[in-house]
Amino acid sequence: MFGGLGSFIASEVSGTVKRNATVIGLFAFAALLLLCAGGYALDAAHTLLTARYGAVAASLWVAGGLVLAALIAFCVGLFVRNRPRQPRPVAATAALAAAPLAARVLSSRTGWRVAALAGIGVLGTILGRQLFTGTDEDEA
Image (cartoon, rainbow, N blue to C red; front, side, top):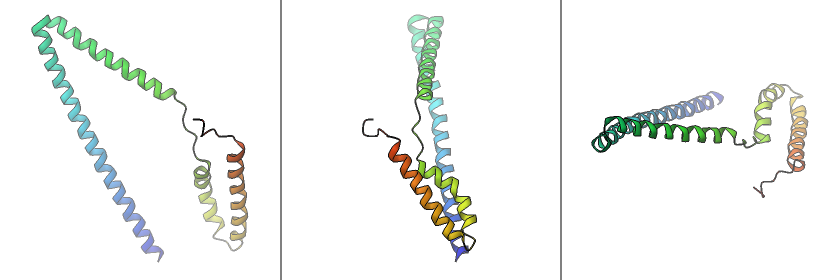
């Protein structure tokens, strides 16, 4: 019974990994095509500006536009880096931390009683923290 469950989980995980790898590959290909299209558009803009203002002025305009785009991207990166992160859910963190201990404790005969008491204690701690921390989700 557990062998079938393990093979089912393995097949689901491998399918998910293959799908994610395909999606990432397609995104990388799209980014490469976008980069090529941007270079072609810059060349076309340089050619147009050369006909109107001369080669040196056209190069300066294109370089200035690229510097402006880089500055905007840098400022957006700084803004995103300095934004406060959302707090992690306490229940998920506690579940991930307690999983190895729970597996070891549940394998013994008295483990069920200890696990039940520990679960009640952890649940009380989680509920207490969420009740008394004063989260302002309604005001945000």
